[in-house]
Image (cartoon, rainbow, N blue to C red; front, side):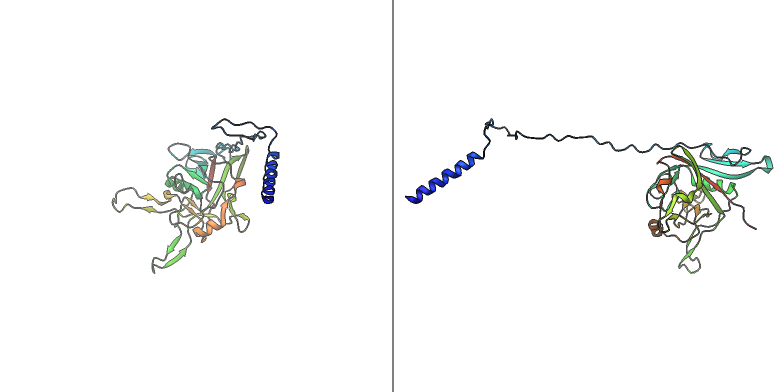
Length: 282
């Protein structure tokens, strides 16, 4: 009897504790409804807009070295490749040529400087939308003499052997607008050597790519190899128009060279890539 009374007292005390912990006033919820706590705080939401990408820069006027010179279009569209010509008649001479290009990459590793549109934009800074053979012809018009692209096999032994590209030395510059200001400098300043913390130290030679005959149609026009994308290369390729005459493998290029983002104008900006062939030392 004593245990029963103690048990009942404990049950009453426990029940009283539960009752005391409830809110003073409660409202029964209708069947099928969901109770929502009386004290709820609504979360404020803000729409965060991503910053708009910078607007691409327009193509500046073709830069003549002298107001006495004239610009002469070298392509059917009369704008993609321009030659600067000094003198008149038989005394006229192409001083340099300019190629209208578009920025296609501002950040990341590089294997090319200039590629053809729709080929290697993921590893080149600028691209062109024209036949690469026209660039080859423009360089010859400026006095360039094509040599040979990089060799990888010794033709006598058929063993692996590196031979550097040959051809006339070629100066490559870029002329463009950035933040409303005009800039002209060596193209190498857009190619950053991440190991040396400086622009790439090498220059280009006019390797001249190769003309590939169609074995199924000997009468067909040969295919100009640089149209595969390797127009102005950084790493070694067998089809480049311009190439650096030093041994740079694809892996070396990917690990070492990258786009100098802060110097390059926004994506799809139009720029002039200028080419001149310095006179050979006698």
